Image 1 (cartoon, one colour):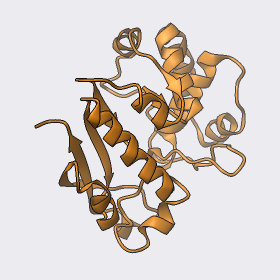
Image 2 (cartoon, helix red, strand yellow):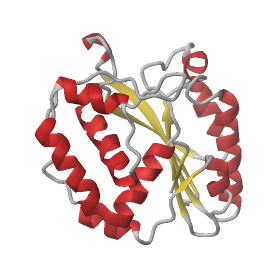
Image 3 (tube, helix red, strand yellow):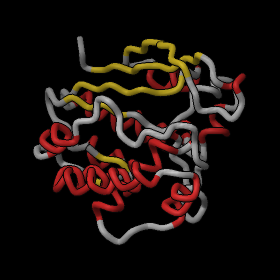
Length: 217
C-alpha cells in the first residue's frame, strides 16, 4: 500500500506496531473531547508515534465531515464537526493490526508501486478527485489535487501494469476527459454515490464517478 500522505502511512505503521498504544491515546481524547480540546490537539503535533497516530484518527473522526485538508504549510486546518464519538461500533484495531503485519506500507508516489505489479497481481488505485465538478471546470479545479499530467502518468502506469498481466481497478471522476483517457484498453462503469463534502446543503447530493477496469477478460 502506498500513499503520499505521510501522516496516513505513519498511522497505519503505528497500528501495525502497537495498536493498543494508539487506542490508549484515543481513550484519552474521547474523555477530553470538547471544542477547546479539539483545537488544542489540532494545533499541536506530539513527538511520539502512537500519540501522533491517535491525533490523526481523533481529528479525522471529530472534524467537519471527516474531511482531510492541510494549508500551504502542511498544517491540518479543518474545523471541528458535530460528531463526538472517537470510537466507532465496528472498530477492531487488533484485527487491523493483524492484517497490516503482512502489508508493505510506503509513503511514495503511485508510479513507483504500480510499476512493481506483475502477472495476476491486483492493483486498486484511488487518486484524489472531486465528483462535484463533472463539468468543463473539472481539470482546472482538480489540478491542485491531482494534475492532468498526473492523470496521464496514472493511465500510462496502469497500461504498463496491464501489459505485464496485472489486474487493474481505478476509481475516478465521471468526466468525459477521464473516459477518453481510458477508452482504448479499459472497461468503464459509471456509478452513483452520495457526496457530503460541501459547505452548503445544495452541494451534498448524489454524484457520478467511474470505475475503470482492466485485465479481467
